[in-house]
Length: 244
Length: 94
Image (cartoon, rainbow over all chains, first blue to last red):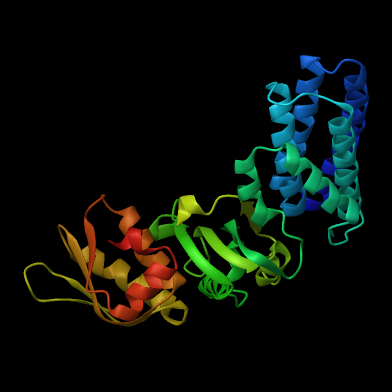
């Protein structure tokens, strides 16, 4: 399925999930300890975060990461459900809906007043450890982040890339110019047998872990001339430490 | 690009550029050379002036097509070592 189709499916499914989340949150007002309802709301946050990650939507991932943490604490009875918290969670649902609209309209996901206010409110309820981890990812989307983020980049370039005048090594060097490469791994599994190989094709694939102030959009620009026909994924990683 | 040394190990010596511009020649010469060598194949890269993704793939394909452990690379220069490191290929050429 093409990325556009995946995005369209994500938007439709997330709209349904958010509608379900709203119903469940309203239900919590009358049944604040209903485990089934709490679990159902948690699953919505978790699913939206996972899907947004797959689709390379770091702003949604960052926001739902905090939301998910609060929902997790709720279902584990580490927090008590009250009207204030339900109100914050309903705002959270609206924030996701707003970001979803940006994605649907192909606009840059920007931080609204409600977004900033809701993140602040959620942080009062979230586990302190998650706040530190999320500080980088929650930075407002600009061309450059205020704090370096960490990305895992999967490069499956089309085999004809070199015949078409592009050099994969130059792409790696360009990434290195945008930050610090913490790991670069070449995958050789698709290199064919010597006798049958087409010497001008690119069979190698790469995984790169990069720490950079560049936004996902900026990193995507590196691959603007090679994206078609290839499979390139830029996935924000919340924890750089593991790769350092 | 490829010569077979006269020593008893019959080392394959790479010379010039193992790059896109000489990909076909490298493939043909390596193909011919390995047929003449029996036993382990040592590829000496000390005099290799340049290596790129295409050249690296050819060398990798050769090694992967032969019995594991039969091909060994030695003598990478500093610039080529840097290329192998920066491209994530180094572990495959050790």
